[in-house]
Amino acid sequence: MDEPSEIGRRVQRMRTERGMTQRQLAEPSYTAAYVSTLESGKVRPSETALRFLAGRLGTSYEELATGRPAHLATELRLALTDAQRMLATGSADEAAVQYRRLLTDAEHLGLPAEQAEALLGLGDCALETGELTDAGRHFAAAEHLLADEPLPRRARAMRGRAIAHLLAGELRYACYLLESAIDELGASGLTDPEALVMLYAAVIGPYIDMGAHARAAHAAELALALAPQVHDPALVAGMHRQVARTFLAEGRTADADASLAKAQTMYRQLRLRTDLAHCHWMRGYVKAQSGELAAAERELRTARDMLAARGATLYTAQVEVELADVLRRLGRYDEAAGLLSALLDLDDRHGAVHAGGAHRLLGLIAEERGDTESAEEHYVLALGLLERSGATGDLADLCRLLGDLLRRTGRVEAALDAYRTGLGHRAAPGTTTLGPAPAAPPFQAGHGGVG
Image (cartoon, rainbow, N blue to C red):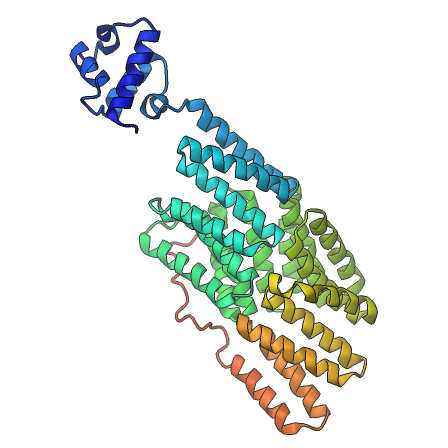
């Protein structure tokens, strides 16, 4: 609300424009003397008084209190919805231009909720284009603007910040942010199903990458139990996409494919092309796990083409790592190595997990071609990258690969060291380095577990 003097001048101007006397404006609830005092700026009007006067003047409470015509805020919210649709179905770069313009408009109009929404949109755009530092900055700014709001209103910003760290390879910190948000939500008593499903779905990926499969399965079970209370179909689809990862970790490829099919249908109906591409990506991975390599290649190429067309550089590169693995298994080493070699130039921008995966595959290709020296070099580079990220499951696998290579080349002591390192990473299955898992919400819905 503006200062009393500004409100008073506004009331007087509108009253005069409408040819009303102070008495006509005041009756029947107030006196002409009150209106006179208000117009002179000597009293701060209550919300009740301003709403009454706005009704008499034929305007909105918001316009009388702030000078902003109500339709401007409404138009801004509609434009934010259009920008969200543009991001979902069109270009992230074009959507970012729209969000930046709307952020400026919201700042000019003094609308913090709309500013936060524009910042969240900019964060989502930056995640898609791989600008992870910018993404983290936008989500942090949105969280700051919403600091006085209930935690469920801040959940999207908190999740976005965690995903920016996750994509940069900072798995432990991403888990810490998501677990802290889940615990805070539980402690607050505001067990909002949509916020919880959003956070549980987001934490499944880093749990699996860190080898904490028990925690991932538990998060998936809780998300599935809460899903019937969630009314946002895109959020439910995203949950199914992440739950599929827990099915894969348990070797339940048919269940994983069924979960992905549900998500894919919903994304197709909603025309969410990036999310649909992610489903093709995951289904390609499922097909590869089942040994259906030709089908896996088709799904992964579809995902890569969809993401590349949208300028989603980071996700495109990650899909190409998966595609290279399928090509390697098909014996098409030159194609696979060509894809991976091009990706190594993106190491700094795309995080340690991505680069580590590329080096691991190049090591496998070199080993299968009989070039043990090159294979060892790639495995060691991959280990260094993954140690920084905390990708425990991948680290254990790499230590096994390196140990096997060293043993075959006669370096038994060095091989034993590699195996011991791998066993160290698997010493506490189902846990992270973060202490106790988040507490379960105080209520459950249904029995939709993961097994």
